[in-house]
Image (cartoon, rainbow, N blue to C red; front, side, top):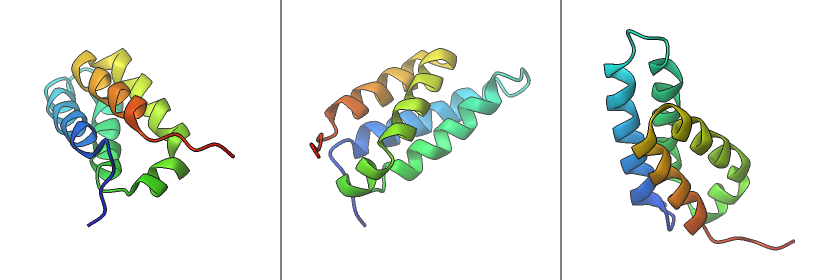
Length: 88
């Protein structure tokens, strides 16, 4: 199993987002949170190289989670910020 520097933050963001998403699924707000939660559980298993290939998606879903559920959003943004940056 590969992991990256932000694996535990992404996993925490994913789990909390899924819980919040399920709770708020009655309102349509829960749907993007559930999708984002599953994405971050997937990102938690990625290597640093795989995360670099998905960096735009990680940032985008971090912002979505930040808008719809603060705690997972903050965890995701911190995880994004701690990913090693590559220079091309």
